[in-house]
Structure formats: C-alpha cells, structure tokens
Image (cartoon, rainbow, N blue to C red; front, side, top):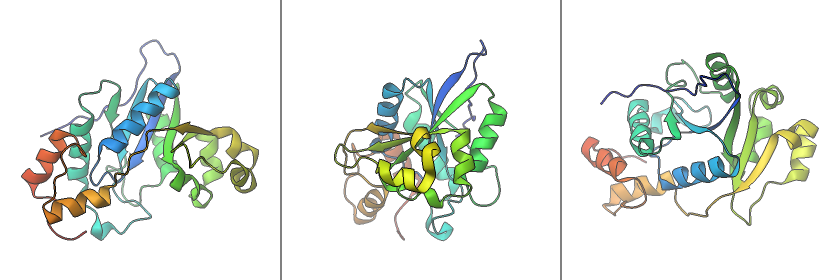
Length: 216
C-alpha cells in the first residue's frame, strides 16, 4: 500500500489553523483519534496533521516498530476523517525527531498556517527540557490535552518558561480513556482482543503483518 503525504494548503491564502499530533504511534489507537477530534472542535482547527516519529530522541530505537509500519497504521486509522491528514516529514529527515526541526519544515512548506502542537499533560511537565523550547514557543502554540482532574500546572509553566510559555500553552479537556500503546502490544502478545481499542483496519494490519508477536 502506498500513501501520499498531504500538507495543509489554502487556495485563498487565508490563515489556516492546523493541529499537529506527533508520537510514536506504536500502534495508534482510538484514544489518539478521540483526543485529536476533541482538540479540533474546541479550537476550531481546520485540520489535524498526524506525524509519526521516525527516531524519537526519548525512546530506544531498538524497541520501536519500523517506521513504515507505524506510518501506514496511522494512515489507515485516519483515512475516514476528512480533517485528519498524515505526514512522513520526520521519517524523511535523518537523525532524532526534534519538534523544532519539524515545525520549521512545516512552516517552510506551508506559509500562512498557524500551527498548534498537541501534547498530553504528562508531556507538558517535561517541556522545559525540550531542545530550544523558548524558540519553539515563538513558532507555534501548544495545546495541553488533559483529563478533568489533571490540568496543566500554570504556576510551574510561568516559573520554567515565563510569560511566553503561559501565553502560548493552552489547555483543553479531552475524553478520559485508559488506553496505551504499551498495553495494546501486550494484549497482542498474550492473545487478548484489541477490537474496539484500535480502528478495525489497524487491527487487521497488525495481525496481517505479524506485529507485536514478540519483544515489547
């Protein structure tokens, strides 16, 4: 199966608002999709761009499913939603997948677009350690998706990132689902069902390609 990368464009030249959901997606699951749709509606974004990471700097590359499998599963999971697109921008770039490099590349390819990078509250707590984070905050907004009982610590953001961090990081409450890619991989290894946890086509792809049968 061959999928063509799509990037947001505006024929009228008007400013577009595009959300970015990056991740390992190993595998992508309905929690990712529900969060993306909730953010799109809350912030009235034109599109959500899913970007599977080729080589996440915070994860052991030896324990990650090959990038082409994760990319194709993401395409299969999102193809039924006309507001969801998938990009292989990080897979075409050698080396670790740093967010700031991705944002610069997307801005170059799609001028006139305002980007909103979607992250969970577990990630927002670590954002001060990201590569060139202060510069990154001038390039795009961040949307911190959280459960009702786990909103971002605004005081901590002010301390670590100053006024810019507070102004450019926006909260949104999303549906609470106890789903993780780690648990899905465990379920496949142990022969448990993953139906309704991942989209049907992703489930079929996992078993067709024999993914997650061993390892982690």
